Amino acid sequence: MLRELLPAGAVAMASSPGELAMACDAVPGTLEAALHSVWAKYVARSDADADDEGCGEPVLEPIPPLLHTATEKAEATFLSEQSDTRVATVYHAIRQIPYGGVGVRRTVEGVLEARCGSCSGKHMALTSLLARLGHTVELLTLHCDFSAAVALHAAAVSAEGALCNGALTRYNAAPVHDFHHVVRLTRPETEVGGSVLLDATWPDCLAPHGFRVNTGWADGGDTQLAVPDTAIYQRIEAVSVAQLGPMKAELVATLPAAQAERRAAFFRDLLVWLTTLQQPAG
Image (cartoon, rainbow, N blue to C red):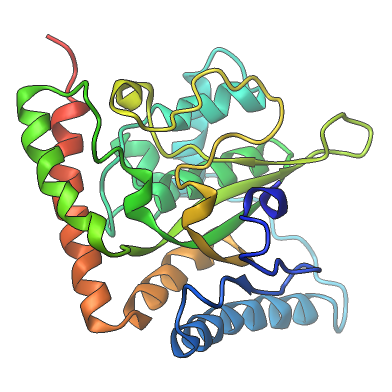
């Protein structure tokens, strides 16, 4: 679990849901406070919504509309294309979607219809699909150095890929602050395994280049996180699928200007390289 994945002694993990844990030596206190205030605002909204739902007279369920929402349509289409709806099947189907659309496709239907998404979009889609299938799932956010997720010195790259890979090595000198996302799946107590972390960031085609693709995961324990545990600064607890896009935009906007510019430049260079690596064969 995430508590065990973080480096021992470097991070004081939250002892209960809703707490924020971080490596104080790695992140300036001013940034810690700013990020926490953004997250707390969204949690407060969730709590207020829950209070509203539990007060007053019982509310009658509305008659379901004849037409599904765009999200429901996209989910139904996506699930109908799979061989079955087991967790592992849905997980790998989302994982195999090419990585892209950073800062653009942060809706479930946007990812499922375009078949392209960043870590936020892909994990929003995975969370929504598994919830639709009756599973208990949550979206977690990890404040991290995302450059550590990329194989900056991979040997097996094409000539074009090598050029882009070389451009990325300039980010070795300092962290690229970002907010990565994973899904926490909590199984019923009657099932073996308890809760597990699902990271569906990288498709199989990136395996030869050193990315953690989780090809062989078969509904067992935690998947490998795209970002090594040593590069994780803090965990931001769960928010809803609908809240994640706006919250992430605010978290990114909270970064100091120099860090924000470095992050934007890194993802521009990364996407150039990944576009080459993810092109269909032939």
